[in-house]
Length: 279
Image 1 (spheres, rainbow, N blue to C red):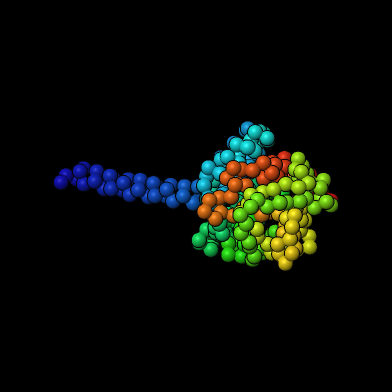
Image 2 (cartoon, rainbow, N blue to C red):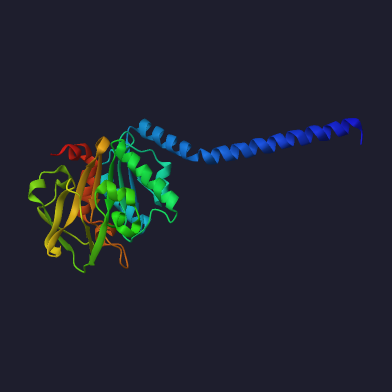
């Protein structure tokens, strides 16, 4: 081997190592910053289109979320409707009312946000920050059931659900008279029904507002809350709906979806600020 060939090999090896190091660094950096890029891209999209996002997830089938978004879009077209496949996808989205008008999470089957405790806490932390930045969160049914282990959200809503009863017939619901003018209930009859398949209940804190309840008693002959709101510090709003339980299939209230449920979700999106300031 000549001296020139020897130095050529050294130079090639040297630059090969630099290139490998650089590509490895770029790969590592992009992986660690993928959340940042995803969140930033969605922020820019929201700002350019001048539309806030409505994010929807359910734990049964993507099709149910898509149907709900179609219904909501027909009623409130001025939002970007985003269907996510699993709760961890929330980590790729911005939070707070500047970019996200509403987050809707349907938990119908005691589904944990993640089997990994660390990731479950991270997702809940994201939701808490959304509320702290003035955002609105709609959680349903099992989201605060004890076995889902969403302890942070149980504190947010002011309740841990620990009782349930399955039902074969649609649930008759009545609006609590003192809350009949709450914007969240606009367009609903004083009495309506939801085919939820199951009722859940627990003990709610005194500052939780029960807007609608079952027409008859179930819990030791007490009426069970169906729609509950609680205003959070920093101007956030948490809304809980009893809809609905997956037995063999998702409940009709969610899978159809039923008009009363869509109306509540639409009102939550359209009147979130008015609901916060109600009473």
